[in-house]
Length: 217
Image 1 (cartoon, rainbow, N blue to C red):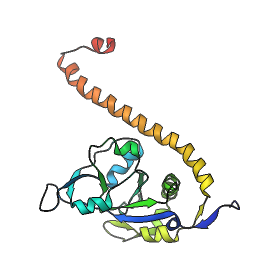
Image 2: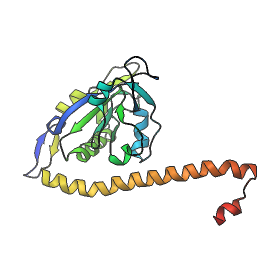
Image 3: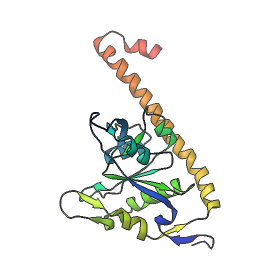
Image 4: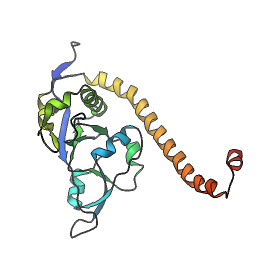
């Protein structure tokens, strides 16, 4: 470990961890705040730069104020998995993702939202993905039957990590931001192409237009 780095845990670079909310399918009682709710199933799409298919839910306005996701937050799946797939999948919430939705966003109560210290979001996100890919999350799961749960408190407070100084973090962020922006730009382009495909395909199948006309355009 370099001399200016230090050994610690994820809890050393986190400001707060928040629970999720599932609310109601329709406005009922005081559940009037319409939000998008990111689930574990949406995480692979988000990581690929896609918008995903997050459902809309209605939650208490005060819960939205407390649990609203912002640029730099990390969502971690804490329930689910399978014998061959652990819990612990995570997604980095970015401005590029948020601006593609017309409402605010929270995570489901089967996930947790982590708010890292300023500047440490990308570092923590990629560190968690590295641990997930190394199957480390299996050792933090509890429950042997049915749905497995991730001991996220144990993960954040006991898993040893090496923490770089803010100067190194700044350089790291400058490097990975380019990759993150490219991923979401590609996802947006893919979404646009899919929309065009879905608009043209029925017209092609019906004979309303020909492939030659499409190619010419």
